Image (cartoon, rainbow, N blue to C red; front, side, top):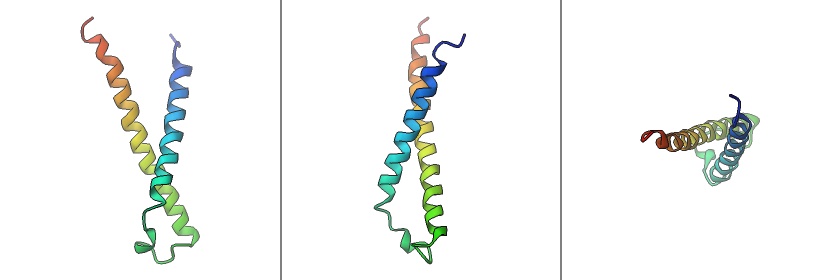
Length: 78
């Protein structure tokens, strides 16, 4: 009944951390100073972290849903 739960949890963690790192790396080239008053303030840094987490969550959810759906395709013909 619980076969594969540990593997799924590990995949979720790895994918989430991967997309968090990629999103943070990609957002480093975005010019937040055009949208915030004080780009070096703590509020601006917290905003950058929140935006990074939100985008990474969307990306990892999309990827994991796609992975799950593609794995379920094998049950079409059974």
